[in-house]
Image 1 (tube, rainbow, N blue to C red):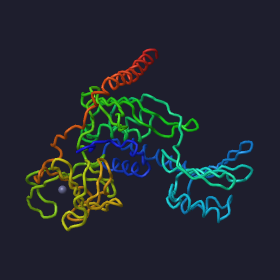
Image 2: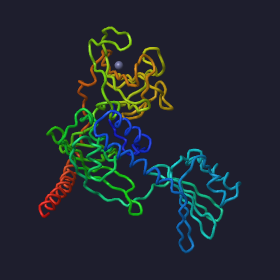
Image 3: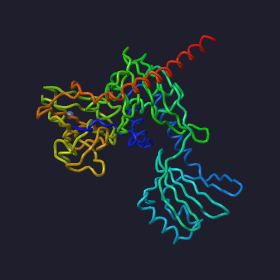
Image 4: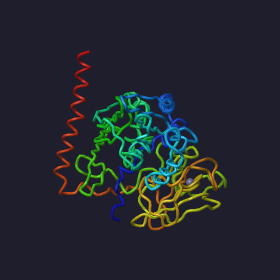
Length: 428
Ligand SMILES: [Zn+2]
């Protein structure tokens, strides 16, 4: 069972734009707080548009930087042919294949061209929010590598209370929807952010806010988060263990991660529960339903709820496109009716908790787009909603002292800000 619960934070690079929009849409279709979600989606759309501001040049004494955004159909030659002969561009393209291929550049991503006396001395392309491709030209000798994107990082406290939804509360605090996804990811094992949320719930997070040129460019890690749900306070503290693996723990050092996520889809609606008898929507007769149906728009990403190995992948008349995953201790989870699988999914592939394996669809016997999610233990169907998932390993004894000292420090930071906020209120 080894490291089945390792949270690969670093690989959880905020692949925002796409998943973000899909999540916003899912939410918009199904739930209350529609106005705020619209605001969220609009904000997202606006940000995308801002990305399309083209080629604003900044001139320094002898260094000129041309900034731009990749447009549809852009290639290495369309980007660089003003500055370099085709022969050289081909050479660069070939050379960059092992680092990051130019065929993978995506519309909407920013790039920079650095010129000195009209000679290209550098090219930078932002692969995602974390990494960039760098091409450096030193007298005709090109070095190509990936480098981390640098931000100014401030550790800030964000707090708000919920009236309708987590999105609305995050917007109210002046932050972006992205923060709502980050926060819900931390508590994904304990709180179902659709079914469990109620008015009056509150949150406080200590989060790294990233700035570029003085403007908010996104969020880094959440260092600590407090979430009050139905009167119960959940606390989460980020801790990196001696193996370099990061995860969230409560104030006693117990891991927040569990063997299985509470649901394979974030922000969906349960349309049918696990039951011994239900009227089958197609066969119009009473049959048992040995799974949970999550209604969600076609294309919503589906995550595997735990680490495991794919034991079955394919199509059949009843389940449509489906994947079965074998986990430790005799558990199997099944995901039915997908529109399509994620590229690279195949039998015997090892996958990790939270990996996206496919997308919601209505293949097989289905009356609308949904995911039929099933769970077996030792060959017997069990109700995923009632199943209590075991916790991951706690903070190691040798790291406990250091961990506790850090939780005290982080808690103090969050609480101090609260006091300041209430003092400010009093003085008004
Ligand atoms: Zn079902």
